[in-house]
Image 1 (cartoon, helix red, strand yellow):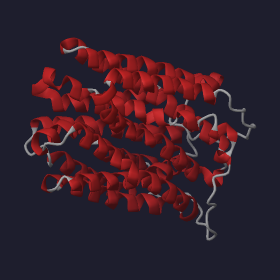
Image 2: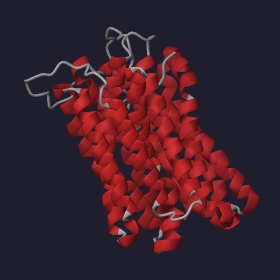
Image 3: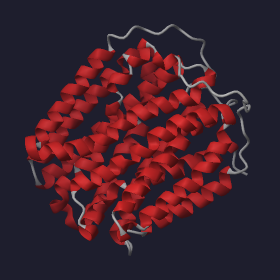
Length: 400
């Protein structure tokens, strides 16, 4: 029988698969439903409308009522989201609804799942639980996009078949995660409505300014750039989009062990290092929009590697700060607040799609780079937090 943490890992993998399976579908909906780039990126960003309130609400529920009830309830929500997306060809408005429901499922999973994995890994080496949670989520993000792109490219019914696969995966995850034991003592008193540690300067000034770039840079890589080279890859353009999304997210996961070791000695340099990678990635994005043919295609791969690395570095830098600042009884809520902030970056491709026809893609990417550098410089002025006794398992995406 698989270990409890491994059963939970499958559930986290499955829900993050569903969160990102939509990413390579832009060209499918453009061809079959006539959706514009702006409409698709708005649908992509609609995910956040479900994610943010679900993170905030279910983070509190998980700290008060336990992790298991939240994760068990999340799975049917994720299934329904794919069912609604599957019906999208009947009415494009259903795609917005499906994306919002996918956000709700992810919001239920991220805070509660990260905290539950930490507690299920109490006997493992330091950092193992957080590493397991992050690998599960990042692998799901990458594999969901890759598989959906391949299925939509070469299997029949491209508007339906990717979602059928996800529904089957979620049903299997439900069977696996159901018997996993609860690790949190149920509290009868209401959970605190204020996350105390995250309302202080080390977080508000040291982390918050750069949080939108965590997913903002990643989504630029797989939502904005692939359509720019569609004409050069017409025969495999859908699969290419899925590949770029997978490359972006998996690069972010792979780089995390090295980042973790670096942060143990130079934690204050995590965000600046991520910003440097982000600026380089945006430079590669500029090459994409100012060239064509093979050069542009190669530049998309380069941008995915650099922006994926930026995502990975910034993600872990913020999570390390959260675990250092948050007390145990606010753990799931604190992780939830952080995820809310970083997922605001999902709106960035939509903003680019609105502004680029007026000022150009190159100007948009340059402005993002300037804002990213400015936000990191602001964060460098934040006061250092007071030291707090270390936990057995850090709430960061990787272990040692």
